[in-house]
Image 1: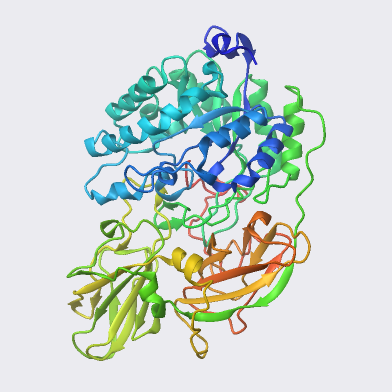
Image 2 (image 1 turned 90 degrees about the horizontal axis):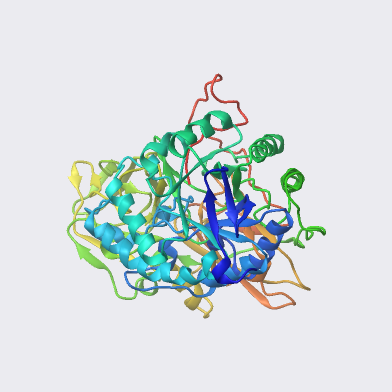
Length: 631
């Protein structure tokens, strides 16, 4: 590498190209998100990207992953951003960085911290002083960390994106975009290339004088038309597609998305022939572990699955796919690719079936789940109002009169965000769900205990201009009576699983076919080295699963399309040591409470399919599902 003072990455407008250290350069890049891949696997994934012929990696920085509460920052372990930049450098990949503040990425709230909503009136992604103050204080921590990694300072970051597809957001607040551009310049200097990315329809509000304009589109779109439109905003300089879609995301209850190899390779080749620089989104998708998935709002609330496999060239488990080899072949026509074979797929493992044991009902652990006791309020409060970002909260009240006939329980104004599990005196009654299921019928004596467990299924990451508050947004109504006098228990489920369940707790006596929110667990050992595996939960309904205290994410077997959860080998203890698996099943347990580990994923079950959208024949072919999200 040249010395820092001679290093440069600039736009050569006269010749419609980039110059790297004065020489013509184009990037062929791929997206990978460090926050979707366990840290011990970063090097493996980056090496495979380099061996595929890529010369750059593009990634987002999710603000909410690093600032869990105002002024508290976390850059340790899987959040060690400089360690990831260093791994990219070792893999000989340049970096295209997208720090937001909003990132979409199908990530919880598009990367914005939920604590912003503690000010309910805040206008996100605008020049609202409350929003700008939070952004400024975050970037004053983040951007100085990036400064030494800028290319001209001896690092590997060649360009930085300002905001993310801002033109798709109705606010169209140029004051906000100018403020961000000024902040980036103040903290990073004038030499780093700053750019914007938008879909073709977003260029009008998303581009800004002084920032290099780039576009995003997929294999099904008209490249010639879109690049011609881009030229109206950026008449000279290299053509750049910052998100060329190799696949697509999945929603619970819809088909698994795929993009054909021939369409993806044909589109890439056409762009490279034009001399364009291209980033493939995603090159390796990874996993929405824990509660980190986002959601879309397209006519209704559509949460994203735990798997973010994306039908990408490198699978969720990090294996090269036929799509990768086809793309590598295209890239090799335009630039040198590293010699040598790609690493083979990782070893996979099968195990089971294993029978799980009942640990007890969620309600019987309330003292440990909510050690400080409940919050009292006449009207129910949101997750944000009680500073509960993720997971679950229990709302409890008592019936003020006897309801002897089945009586309708409902929440006005679609006020269940996002799913409610209803119990009377500890007996599960059923589910209310945002946009989908609006009422249940209950009976109960005066003084009966009404418990409503609320699940936050991920905040909107795209397709909304309103803040996505969670919990009961309105008081539930029973018959004609609005229910008041609530106790709210913000639940620390992960702490219970990690710290308390390893202790020998008293197990509840086995009740007949438990239903409603219930914990199950078992232990198992792996002889030998083990391998990556996929947890299959046949017959289970919906819930959350932990392995050795690590939150693998949500399962929703009943809904699909995803039927297995990826379990990376580093999460498991091998050579005979005991592993513990814990499930929180929210609804119904199968007659045989068993699970098994498979050696391949099932991401495309067509059970219980719901076709929400009619695709008109003239605009969509069946193999190209409607584009329902941005990034």
